[in-house]
Length: 138
Image (cartoon, rainbow, N blue to C red):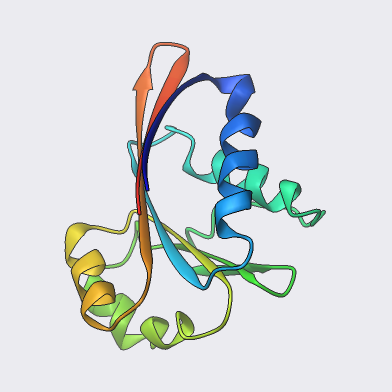
C-alpha cells in the first residue's frame, strides 16, 4: 500500500477512517515521522477515537509507552536512542497483538523490525502551510 494525502488540519479524520479499515485486523508497527508539531500524536488521537476508544491520547514522550484499549500501543522515542529503546526491552512489546504506533522511529528501527519479521507501515508527515502531506508506505 502506498498512498498520499494532502489534508487541512481539521480533515485528519479522513485519513484516520481509511487507516482504521486497513489496520483493524492487523498486528503491525506504524512508524510516524515528521517534524515537531507536524501532527503525529494528532493522527494517533484520531485513529484511537475512530476505533471507539475514549482514552485521553497524549504523546508518551516521557513515559515512553501508552496503551489505549486492549490493542493500541503508542511509543515516542524522541528522547531515547535506538539502543536505549532496545535495552529497555521495548522490542519485545511489539510482539503483543495489536497496532503499535512509534513516533520518531528512524530507518534503523524500521530495518530491525523488518529483520525480525514484523509488519511495518511508515507514515511521513510534512507541514505544508495550513495542511499536512501524509505519505504512507506499507
